[in-house]
Length: 87
Image 1 (cartoon, rainbow, N blue to C red):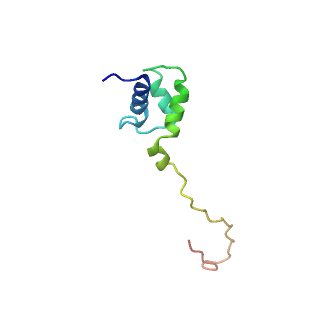
Image 2: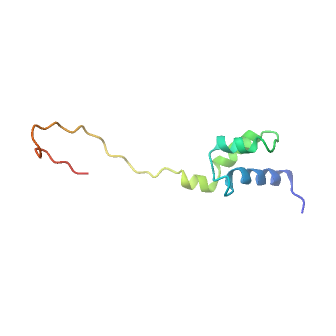
Image 3: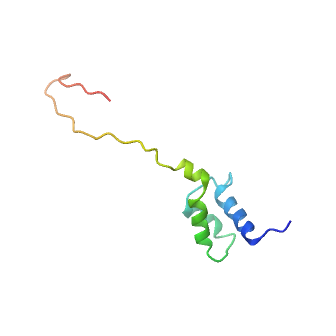
């Protein structure tokens, strides 16, 4: 079965980003892995798009939506146990 050019590019991108050896590293690391082994027109754009649309990366890097509590300054005390704080 002959591979189309797009299929070959997708295979290269998978091997350089999504394979077990590639470990779904960020876009810059994926660029470093693709650069020595292959070239095609707009390859940097394709790498960026592939990394930004990777399902596994999107699930792992999504924001949790947790809101952080406001930090307040703790008052100084003159004696032990004058003020007690809890987390």
